[in-house]
Image (cartoon, rainbow over all chains, first blue to last red; front, side, top):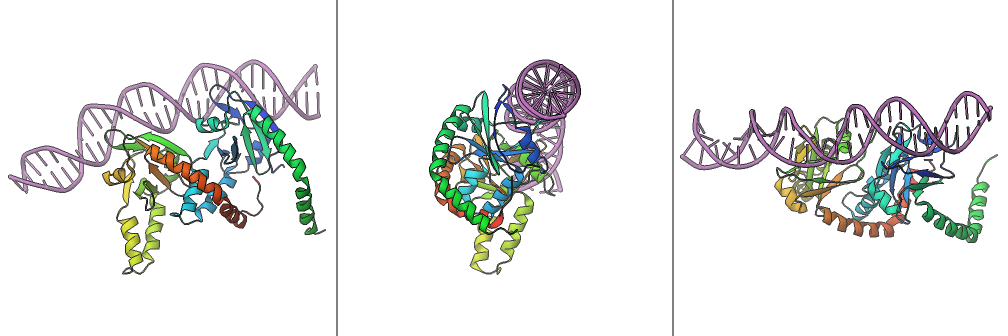
Amino acid sequence: MERYFFSRFDNKVDKKGRVSVPARWRAIIAQQAFQGIVAYPSPVSAAVEACGMDRHERLAESIDGFNPFSDTHGAFAAALLTRSHPLPFDGEGRVMLPEALLAHAGIEGMASFAGRGATFQIWRPDAYDAYEAEALERARTEAPALALMQSQAASGEGA
Amino acid sequence: MERYFFSRFDNKVDKKGRVSVPARWRAIIAQQAFQGIVAYPSPVSAAVEACGMDRHERLAESIDGFNPFSDTHGAFAAALLTRSHPLPFDGEGRVMLPEALLAHAGIEGMASFAGRGATFQIWRPDAYDAYEAEALERARTEAPALALMQSQAASGEGA
DNA sequence: CTGTTTTTGGGACAATATGGGATAACATGG
DNA sequence: CCATGTTATCCCATATTGTCCCAAAAACAG
């Protein structure tokens, strides 16, 4: 069984605002209590970021660990909790993206789902194309750093 | 099902002073004995802070843990307990915000509900917009603090 | 190709937010 | 203790929004 979000899918946003979440990804979430995803604006790009409720609850819990009246707690709560939306699946595995998220990503008509391991992102297709081109370039120059991490992890493995 | 308060909702305060608490949040509170919320002025911002009675009782208990004649006990009791209002839901899931809370947050006409995990806040909409802009900036600079907490709690889980 | 899964479309229905009238509870002053 | 005006509660109506259900089209696998 798959456990992480991979691949890219381009699905249609119908006039009621619904989009299918890729079936393969729904299968990953199927074992969780909340049948749906949690989505929030990426703090660093014009994309919607999303994951299952389990992961998001862990995020909420670690924010809860800060002093509730501190600026640090407030900042993270405002950025990640107030701006996140639980989006339950309908009977066909679709979700409705709220207006605020559509606007943040500039999505209309089509949405690109980009698997990112423990999370995935939802982009306006042409915006994702541009982002990908830039990311590939960066990956090329930073490849040595990844190779280093790989070897570190491997050295700690047993038989 | 959902266990934390997420998202933002902007609801109307009618001329009788009633506001709908978002239905999704009422569902979280539905399993508690007191059908309503407990609200008090935020000690650190121009917002009304609120939660279910269960959490508020735990707050009261931890204040009770202080020496009853200490300044600390007196300060928290005055700030959080004396100024707290239990606000029961009416048949349609609305509450009436007392004058003191409306004044503290400068609310009139519209109220913004900001989910913050275990609690939520109620703001004057334009005041929340301003607060959010500032909070996002701060979250960006303090991101490392969250990353640290994350690594402590959620070491190595999937989606 | 043929059967199955997945995405997409749309109508029927239910839930929610909101408005307002009628009634009951309350504090106050007489 | 009662009268009274005010405040809050209950109840019902309604527009809107979101949810559910069924059906067709498209993609996919054997």
